[in-house]
Amino acid sequence: MSEHPLNDLISTALSNIKTMVDVNTIIGSPVETANGTVIIPVSRVGFGFAAGGTDISSKSPSTSANANFGGGSGAGISISPVGFLVVNGDNVKLLPVNSANTTVDKLIDSVPEMFDKVNGIINKNKSNQ
Image 1: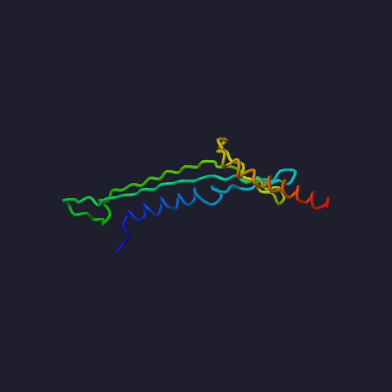
Image 2: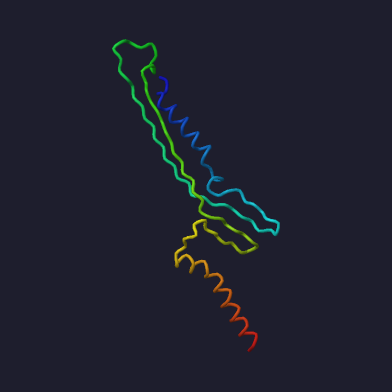
């Protein structure tokens, strides 16, 4: 017994979606600047897919088992930039595309700098003793 035409319809649509959405869509190709900093684009990807079909009954006998099939499929993809990962030596920073950062986001971003300053003060006090 042959496969139902709906299987072919779904397989074709899903294989096309696979070619559009891969890891390079979410985490882009890294770009290296002249000073050695690496910039990596990061995106949010969402997609939806639907398929359906029906076998239409006929009063006259059909010569082909699939002659009275009707079907369709559709897909939608949304790609939104999130930000850029900036790698400079051992320092990694996320630069968001959306400039509407909340106070909590700004506080979290400043934590590594605060640790560096506190470590500097502690090391300075130890060397003065």
